Length: 314
Image (cartoon, rainbow, N blue to C red; front, side, top):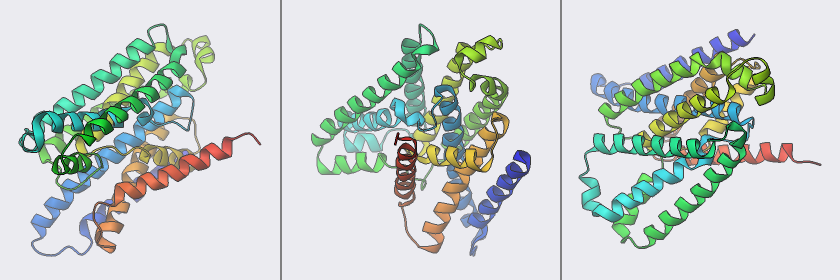
């Protein structure tokens, strides 16, 4: 049953891709297809990365209410953008080499995450709760510092920061996109190789270790993969906090299995399909721009509240 449903997800994914590419395709077809392919690639990379990262993160934290953004990735990205604009000014920020900035953002977010994971989990993965709480506190701190710095910017510089603080799928650099696609493919490959071990980790620390699983090693490797996936997607288009919660929740519901060999790619396919279909509706049918990320965040926020209220004690 899980395999059949997974095949259905693949069919839906390719269907929405074809719809996005071919809907009302007119001359000059080559140019339009090139532009649409670039945007489609960005949607796929972000949706797949965030969806897969969320499933892995929820498994190692044993909590389906959490997303990787809880440890402060989004706040760190906004803080970096604010500091760059504040230091270099609007003109200096605009003249930064895009590829260098893209690489620096990925490295900074991954290194910061690994330092946090290493410091918080140096005594073992039983400190996972402390890691999450520390991430939440750091996220609040970075958002506060970014907000304070933004108040010191002039209106034109503040507008630049605001523009960089929301996910945008238009104008993605092709070189950055290719790099992101390669990193996504490699990271997902490693995640799939860990899928059987994640099946055991999902049973809990005590049970996993009694079965001979090197629990701490798998958790640390999984956190590194999550950090890279989220860093790549965030550096490419900006933060999309609740997309992963949507993708992971739908993956658990549509593919009712505990096997991560299906759950991880299912969440990746669902995340990508949500973004592609949403962009198609807003851009092709409604003629709207720059609204998809807001709607996704709104829907994800409602889902988060629903999950919290459903689990609340009566």
